Length: 375
Image 1 (cartoon, rainbow, N blue to C red):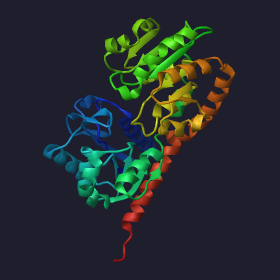
Image 2 (cartoon, rainbow, N blue to C red):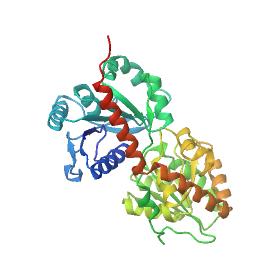
Image 3 (cartoon, one colour):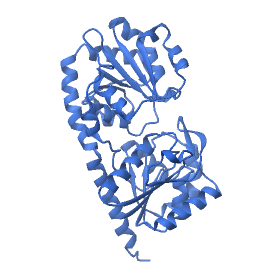
Image 4 (cartoon, one colour):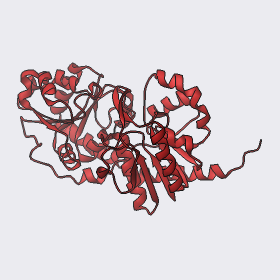
């Protein structure tokens, strides 16, 4: 099958949507399909062979973060040329109602269209205002996917209809086979904690960790915390005060170092405060064998099975985070049993399963588009 995939966000600043598209395309290509991706990107050297660029993007605040989007006549011409040259059997647009490449691809598409919704939010003024104008383009979409029940709820709330719930995929084997790394490994009396997320996005929860860390150190003086992610390290260090002496800021890290950290720390912290529709990092941590302590936002509750595959604490509550971590550190046998269950659970998110589910939706979209509808 000839498959086109449109990405709304800049490839220059990778995030969950870009990783999802990259890995889905790679898995489908491995299965013998002809897959082409289009996305905003200034650094074309970093693009995989199957991807094309529409040029640089503009940073716009969106859903508690910063989205780097690409729009306008020049971008529209590039998208149309890509569609003509691709002559796709199916077009897969991600976040089609974000004003960027995916929306433009949807507007110009003449082939069957599948959409995926990644975003979860309680309310969006932009969607409330823009949805009536965009409704005509909904008729072009043969099938919808949402990466979680929260993303599905948001899509149904603003767009009507329904969506298949197919989770984000993870190459779980890459994390399962990662060896423990002495750089991140704890020992008796000196446990290690890990955190991964942009330092300058409060919704990733580093301020919650900073607020909890002193209380954790009081109970476990030898504890060490590893913080990975891009952003202002000096500013992040200042938030920990005197406790920063036990924190190592790693900056941006490679996929290999991420897997090494997740397979080695005693506890992975996911204190995200909102704006998450799924939680890829939780699946990665579960696959690697790390015990997860996460905030109790709905997306994380779903991934962790309501606490069956990790512990959760009241969202945004540093004292609750500290208490939850301390309790988990005192119960190594319970942690080990939970890790074993979590690793088994993570298998259902492997790309070998997820890509098959997505491809089944493609086939449904193509068949549906061929049907004649009685007037």
